[in-house]
Image (cartoon, helix red, strand yellow):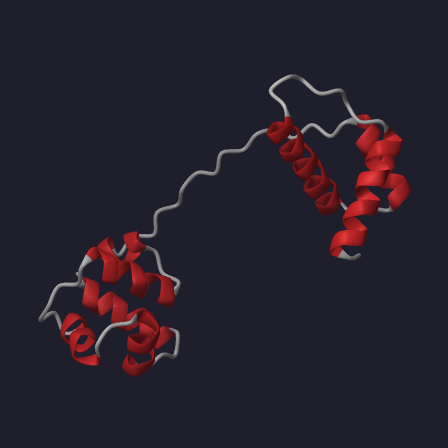
Length: 137
Protein backbone atom coordinates (compact mmCIF):
# COMPACT_ATOMS: atom_id res chain seq x y z
CA UNK A 1 0.00 0.00 0.00
CA UNK A 2 1.38 3.41 -0.98
CA UNK A 3 2.25 5.99 1.66
CA UNK A 4 1.15 9.62 1.75
CA UNK A 5 4.58 10.63 0.49
CA UNK A 6 4.45 8.13 -2.38
CA UNK A 7 1.03 9.44 -3.42
CA UNK A 8 2.30 13.03 -3.29
CA UNK A 9 5.25 12.08 -5.48
CA UNK A 10 3.01 10.17 -7.91
CA UNK A 11 0.62 13.09 -8.37
CA UNK A 12 3.46 15.63 -8.49
CA UNK A 13 5.09 13.71 -11.34
CA UNK A 14 1.75 13.22 -13.09
CA UNK A 15 1.28 17.01 -12.95
CA UNK A 16 4.73 17.47 -14.45
CA UNK A 17 6.07 19.31 -11.40
CA UNK A 18 9.58 19.03 -10.05
CA UNK A 19 10.21 18.96 -6.32
CA UNK A 20 11.49 22.53 -6.58
CA UNK A 21 8.29 23.71 -8.28
CA UNK A 22 6.02 22.02 -5.74
CA UNK A 23 8.11 23.38 -2.87
CA UNK A 24 7.90 26.90 -4.21
CA UNK A 25 4.13 26.73 -4.80
CA UNK A 26 3.44 24.82 -1.58
CA UNK A 27 5.72 26.92 0.60
CA UNK A 28 7.78 23.96 1.89
CA UNK A 29 11.47 23.14 1.76
CA UNK A 30 12.89 20.70 -0.76
CA UNK A 31 14.58 18.65 1.95
CA UNK A 32 11.29 18.30 3.82
CA UNK A 33 9.40 17.27 0.66
CA UNK A 34 12.09 14.75 -0.19
CA UNK A 35 11.86 13.26 3.30
CA UNK A 36 8.05 13.05 3.08
CA UNK A 37 8.13 11.44 -0.37
CA UNK A 38 10.70 8.90 0.85
CA UNK A 39 8.76 8.07 4.04
CA UNK A 40 11.33 9.58 6.39
CA UNK A 41 9.06 12.31 7.80
CA UNK A 42 5.37 12.89 8.34
CA UNK A 43 3.57 15.92 6.99
CA UNK A 44 1.31 18.14 9.12
CA UNK A 45 -2.33 18.54 8.21
CA UNK A 46 -1.76 22.20 7.28
CA UNK A 47 1.13 21.40 4.94
CA UNK A 48 -0.82 18.46 3.50
CA UNK A 49 -3.70 20.82 2.71
CA UNK A 50 -1.33 23.26 0.99
CA UNK A 51 0.28 20.48 -1.06
CA UNK A 52 -3.14 19.05 -1.95
CA UNK A 53 -4.29 22.47 -3.18
CA UNK A 54 -1.20 22.89 -5.35
CA UNK A 55 -1.59 19.39 -6.81
CA UNK A 56 -5.37 19.64 -7.20
CA UNK A 57 -5.71 16.43 -5.17
CA UNK A 58 -8.15 15.54 -2.42
CA UNK A 59 -6.97 15.06 1.14
CA UNK A 60 -8.82 11.72 1.16
CA UNK A 61 -6.76 10.49 -1.74
CA UNK A 62 -3.46 11.65 -0.29
CA UNK A 63 -4.20 10.10 3.11
CA UNK A 64 -5.97 6.89 2.13
CA UNK A 65 -5.46 6.44 -1.58
CA UNK A 66 -9.22 6.51 -2.07
CA UNK A 67 -11.33 8.81 -4.15
CA UNK A 68 -14.53 9.43 -2.24
CA UNK A 69 -17.49 10.54 -4.25
CA UNK A 70 -19.71 12.88 -2.31
CA UNK A 71 -23.35 12.61 -3.32
CA UNK A 72 -24.66 15.85 -4.65
CA UNK A 73 -27.72 17.23 -3.03
CA UNK A 74 -30.13 18.05 -5.78
CA UNK A 75 -33.34 19.91 -5.52
CA UNK A 76 -35.82 20.49 -8.26
CA UNK A 77 -35.67 23.89 -9.86
CA UNK A 78 -38.97 25.51 -10.64
CA UNK A 79 -38.75 28.15 -13.31
CA UNK A 80 -41.66 30.58 -13.09
CA UNK A 81 -43.70 30.75 -16.31
CA UNK A 82 -43.07 34.49 -16.57
CA UNK A 83 -39.32 33.88 -16.46
CA UNK A 84 -39.61 31.19 -19.10
CA UNK A 85 -41.53 33.51 -21.43
CA UNK A 86 -39.07 36.36 -20.85
CA UNK A 87 -36.14 34.03 -21.53
CA UNK A 88 -37.61 32.95 -24.85
CA UNK A 89 -38.11 36.56 -25.90
CA UNK A 90 -34.59 37.51 -24.76
CA UNK A 91 -33.02 34.44 -26.37
CA UNK A 92 -31.52 33.36 -23.05
CA UNK A 93 -29.88 29.98 -22.58
CA UNK A 94 -30.84 27.56 -19.82
CA UNK A 95 -27.68 28.48 -17.92
CA UNK A 96 -28.50 32.18 -18.17
CA UNK A 97 -32.00 31.47 -16.88
CA UNK A 98 -30.57 29.68 -13.85
CA UNK A 99 -28.09 32.48 -13.15
CA UNK A 100 -30.79 35.16 -13.30
CA UNK A 101 -33.19 33.08 -11.20
CA UNK A 102 -30.56 32.43 -8.53
CA UNK A 103 -29.53 36.10 -8.48
CA UNK A 104 -33.14 37.20 -8.10
CA UNK A 105 -33.71 34.73 -5.26
CA UNK A 106 -30.52 35.86 -3.57
CA UNK A 107 -31.55 39.51 -3.76
CA UNK A 108 -34.99 38.75 -2.37
CA UNK A 109 -33.56 36.62 0.43
CA UNK A 110 -31.30 39.47 1.55
CA UNK A 111 -33.97 42.14 1.41
CA UNK A 112 -36.85 40.68 3.31
CA UNK A 113 -38.07 37.85 5.46
CA UNK A 114 -41.58 38.14 4.07
CA UNK A 115 -42.70 36.45 0.87
CA UNK A 116 -42.15 38.62 -2.18
CA UNK A 117 -44.47 38.88 -5.14
CA UNK A 118 -43.59 36.97 -8.29
CA UNK A 119 -41.98 39.04 -11.02
CA UNK A 120 -43.85 39.76 -14.22
CA UNK A 121 -42.52 38.85 -17.64
CA UNK A 122 -41.50 42.48 -18.19
CA UNK A 123 -39.64 42.59 -14.86
CA UNK A 124 -37.77 39.39 -15.77
CA UNK A 125 -36.85 40.93 -19.14
CA UNK A 126 -35.49 44.02 -17.37
CA UNK A 127 -33.44 41.76 -15.11
CA UNK A 128 -32.04 39.91 -18.15
CA UNK A 129 -31.17 43.24 -19.79
CA UNK A 130 -29.47 44.45 -16.62
CA UNK A 131 -27.37 41.28 -16.46
CA UNK A 132 -26.36 41.67 -20.09
CA UNK A 133 -25.32 45.28 -19.51
CA UNK A 134 -23.36 44.46 -16.37
CA UNK A 135 -21.78 41.15 -17.38
CA UNK A 136 -21.80 41.41 -21.17
CA UNK A 137 -23.43 39.03 -23.59
